[in-house]
Amino acid sequence: MAAPPAHIAVLFPLVIAVAMILCTIFIHARGLVAIMEFVRRERRLGRAGAKFWRDVTIVGGAALLALTAHLVEITAWAVLFVLAEEFPHIATAFYHSAVNYTSLGYGDVVMSASWRLLA
Image (cartoon, rainbow, N blue to C red; front, side):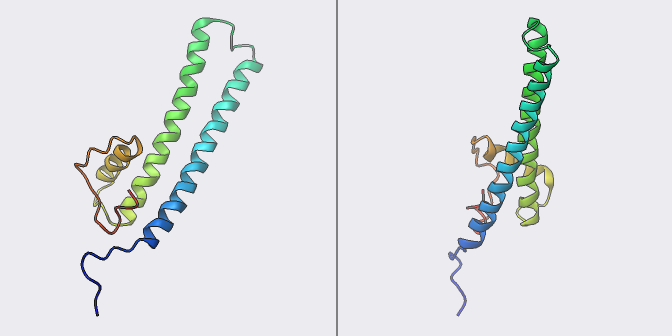
């Protein structure tokens, strides 16, 4: 007997989500390490704390490294959504990933019931 249409598999999307969250944590940790190495290098070279605009540049560089890590994480989720065949185009998957990542949750692009737990 076939499962009713309302039946949604929970375990598989949950396992995939946990694996992806672990990947996200790794990417984020790598980004934080890059920021720490950058700031330590600037400090070791005597640039940090020397001049206001130099400090602004250092903070800006750290912020760009953090942004890069976030964009890599959003892209990784988008690729997963495309691989799960939830979205036909990477642009839509990236938009959906970014909306969920930032917890805006517009709801204008939603995943199927089978994968909604992943979102």
